[in-house]
Image 1 (tube, rainbow, N blue to C red):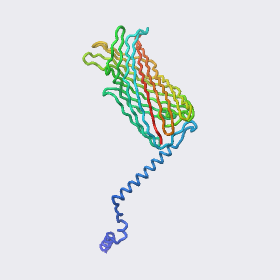
Image 2 (cartoon, rainbow, N blue to C red):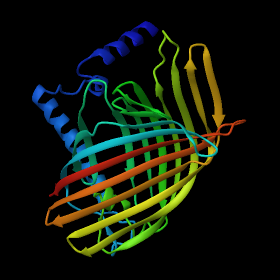
Image 3 (cartoon, rainbow, N blue to C red):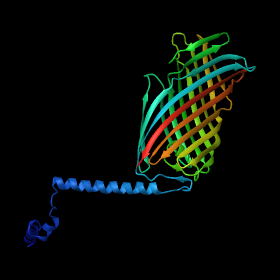
Image 4 (cartoon, helix red, strand yellow):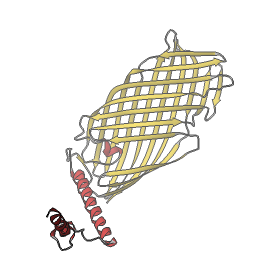
Length: 354
């Protein structure tokens, strides 16, 4: 009896006319065209969801819109020409200010073309540099916000050339003889970021409607290393390394004389208080002198900009000067030395929003 019941149950489960078979029957197979249409629908839904989120983000105004306004156009295209040049100087002197050693160097002007493409306030960009194989290189990531901004820059200066002076002697420093590496990490905070917009001047992601200014707080970490490459034949060597962290402040102002113009100026001074410098030199084979000096460095930065808006177009010019000045006194000696690194940049930009 048991086996008869088991056989009857098995036949019921495998029978195509049974209810169980209907429950486990596979669904209809999709054709290739139906699969493509289904994928298109999913992509369309995802794209609409992303666009709705970007639109909501673009329309969100967290500032005083009488002073600062976020552009509402969907698309943006811009390009910018950038020319930069760096200056490095090193001076060594006695306490009575008698010069002992002086290096005055500069790089060749470097040109780079930038391109940016944006959608609903999100911009992607890239730059194309034009330089020699062994020349100046820089990698920079910057974010400008109304309340705060940050910057990370790593660079290499390979085209330094200039003069070497010692009492009674002067010589030229050939290009490529001396290298310089630097690292800058920094940021600012704008106390009146609801009315004053740094990005309105620096990357045009906001529009300044009324004139306004703001005190700025700054923080910077900087490291710089430069020197002659070691000559293995004569063991001649000259190099320095400086690294400092500092805090400071300044002021920025956006002047809007009319609806078509924006004029910007800002300046900050940062005082270094944590860090050290090192000087290492070998004046003759087998004689190497090492010393550590410590003093208060200064980081100075200034920006100027002029922008003109006409309907959906805009254009502008910019100028930036960045200087790091490090005076030092060698321990246990009456010798002093100072390092100064100055970077000057000029920009011309044009863009369209639609």
